[in-house]
Image (cartoon, rainbow, N blue to C red; front, side, top):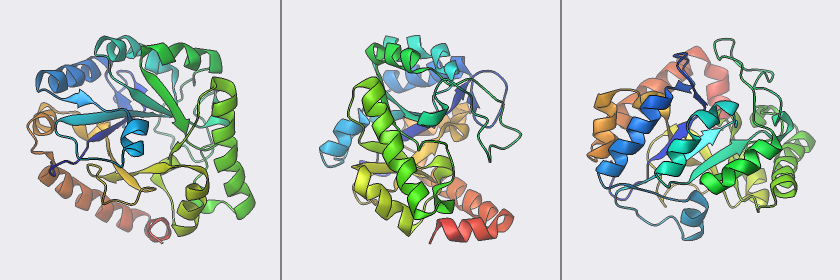
Length: 257
């Protein structure tokens, strides 16, 4: 791990389906146990951003995209370890499911928490941030739709949960220059899916995260807890970006524009 780099771990579903977006709840608990035993402490993302993204020795952050109801499977674990976890919400889907247009067929459908269920999680250590209104890829939006996705998601969270919303995560990790400029007008910081630890040198509106899919093995977890993650991430990142460029060349080029 790069000196001072903050591993921001990204989760989606918590179940035993083996889906690419799922994490076994037992493994999630084991991950927090390993991090705690290695002397790591959870960082609150909003506070870290507000403090200028300082270098953090033995720190980590938790993010959960979409707000699926399976979060209840690990809520007690988050509370037990007294960590902060930020849930990024596609606000028009709250109380519905994750069957939005463009969702890959291989991703199991699941119910998304209601506003009242989300509110009940706050006392356990969960925080809330924006993920758009409908989970549409923002690089496909015209100017009007883009503004509605960004403004609407923030406003819904602030109105329904009574908390300021300053953070954003790009649906599918997709953005381009136009999208990032629009996001800057509404949010203090935004997070992508580039496989890397986070640091103050990165674009404040394109902060890297580490998908939990890449932390499913004891080998990967050992690298995380011993500070040897960075080199391994670099290899995985190169392979993933190369595969994306070959499989979806147009989308890959547009997302990097």
